[in-house]
Image 1 (cartoon, one colour):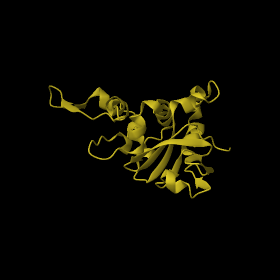
Image 2 (cartoon, one colour):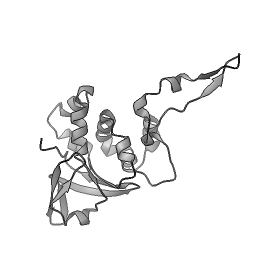
Image 3 (tube, helix red, strand yellow):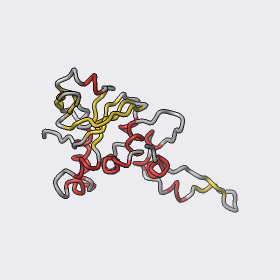
Image 4 (cartoon, one colour):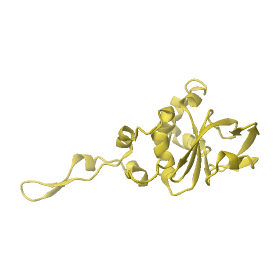
Length: 186
């Protein structure tokens, strides 16, 4: 499930390289000079030994490329790699495709960064809640400040109207794959 190699290249921070010129003066490589400040933080540290965090799971999934692009556009990478624990409801590409035409493209524009971040934070709950454990709740508080409803229909669990399709344990929580984008009430 992990195609992390290509994706991590996109997400990993540029390493500073210092070389000396003919006069013994140290100079930084152009890659180090051009490193964008938003590509700093723990989201861009590579660690091949730990269990993947929620962001790495999304990056490694071919079904979550739109979600990853949205997380990047909103600048939330570092939020998804903190120690957590976090419960993340990860809409599939198909879930984003089901939004009205042009919605995703509009949200990915830099001027809509705050609105996009609010939508994405509606998909994160502090804590590590399994699907079975969530069956005991009627509502869950989201990182964006809102609460979403939890419904149980047979063996299926729905959060904010989105059905949990699969659950993947992460090093800093759990990722629940969902079939719908959970939009904030406001």
